[in-house]
Amino acid sequence: MKITPGNLTRHEIIGMEAHVVMSSDPGHVCRRGLIADESKEMIHISTETGNIMVSKMTSVFDFTLPNGTVVRVDGHKLRGTPENRIKKRQSRRW
Amino acid sequence: MPKKRPRQSEAKRLARARIKLLWKQASEIAKTDPEGARQRMKVAFKVAQKVRIKVPQEIKKKICRRCGMVLVPGENCRVRIRNNRSKHLTVTCIACGNITRYYVR
Ligand SMILES: [Zn+2]
Image (cartoon, rainbow over all chains, first blue to last red; front, side):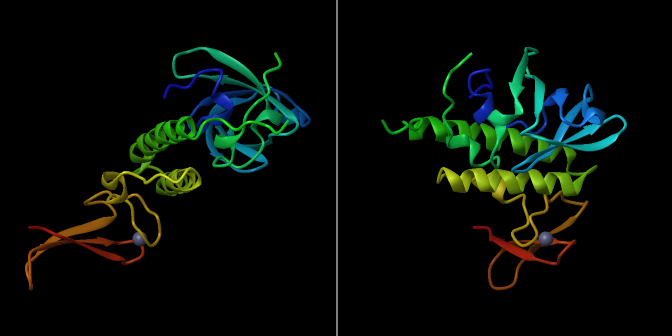
């Protein structure tokens, strides 16, 4: 199954390219890199200037899908462990 | 009204795609970043467990059952054909010393 904007929140985000658009930590804003790991509350991004851990709840991300489209996702929608996200249903409000 | 869950079959298809994706990444970085590869396969097994599907046999054989390392022959595992009692293949993980035997008919 391909990754689409519709199922991104239930699909795998490890290995995707991410860009932090907004964050409560000003040091993390505008940093981009590949996602190395994911836990319940945090996303580990390996950037050119070292690895950073960004909180999911207080950030907004831009993901670059494998086919090149860029999707902006509120980190709040990605809460939960990677294996728990697979069964979550998103109420569509955009 | 109770919230409807996505259909089970859809979750399973999604999970299979995720496992395939994780395995592709893990096998690519197995040599340069073994710890990262191990972490990815850990997530893959968790995903499989959640939706109650099996991780494909050919992927399982390339992972150490004790420490979860991605095995690369000649790099971090030893593969030998042995012939006592019956012909079999032994795969030894060099990191933890776990031995897995596969019988060859
Ligand atoms: Zn091992």
